[in-house]
Amino acid sequence: MIRAQTILGSVIALLGVTAVVLVFRTPAEVAPARSFTSSQQCKECHAQEHAEWSASQHAHSWLNPDVRALSNDFANTDCIDCHAPQEIYSTGIGARVLPRASRRAEGVDCIACHALPDGGVAGTKDNPAAPCRPQAMASLKSVDHCAGCHDQHKTVSQWRETQYAAQGIGCVECHMPARADGSGHDHTMHGGHSLETVRKAVTLVAERSKGLVRVALTNSGAGHHFPTDERSRAADLWWRPVAPQGAPAESWRHLWRFRSPYRHEVDLVDTLLPSAATKEVWVDDPASLGAVEVALTYKRTPYWKDPLRPDPETEAEFVHRVVLQP
Image (cartoon, rainbow, N blue to C red; front, side, top):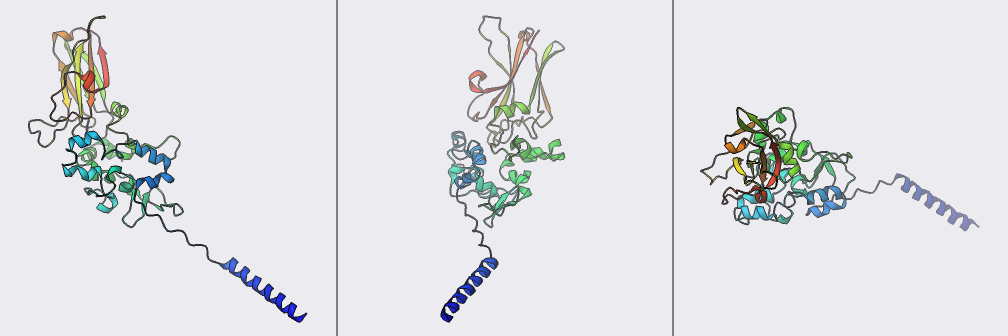
């Protein structure tokens, strides 16, 4: 009987100790942050952002056939810096980016923009419970964050001279707009490859004055020159008489080209249209006395070897078209 009481007492004591241990045990340590070696890993938690990025020019910056043609398949090694950059936070916000040797097919990927030198991830808010442990970094939304690549052709420098800069309206507000549902910012990177975005940038007016046709293009919606960034881009103003009903369409007649030349195009001048500026061109031609059509076209890849094409119907996209009656 005494032995049974002793055993029972021992069991009760052991249970008490166990209970104390359970009550005062320290919480399990948080699992270490994951190491990210590909943007595909981000898809697990950020499916929407990854889908948007996958459809963006950032994702295609290395494999884009136009880029490969213009860079001579990256034989022009200067192009690699921005089309497959190292982590921006490692090279320095606002500093010229450096090229990376790995995962180049992912282009300007999640890691390039978000990875921190200490292995952390830059985000819009702190979240220590998330696998990537994002840290709130105000610089992530700054213009300088984009400047390492997008000031190579002076786009950010152009922005600094505008009212957008004076008002604190940067790159993100226009090119990564907030989603309507409040879930964050669109990572599609709307810009020069979006005809809708290009249309919002400029306003085309055609009117009669002093017996002539005045054509005016105003950079009314871009916080930088138009067009900008890639020197292969061009915008052209055209006009043509409106043919009588049933007659073949008249040929387009060129008025003006907006484009920034490459360094080797020494015989060309920069004709980009600054923010808020207007370019006027006058049509003084007897054929313009009747109804005329005026148009602005846009080309993403007018390679420098090509002459100005006479037929914008097949060589470019129409941004705006205006019919002016007599």
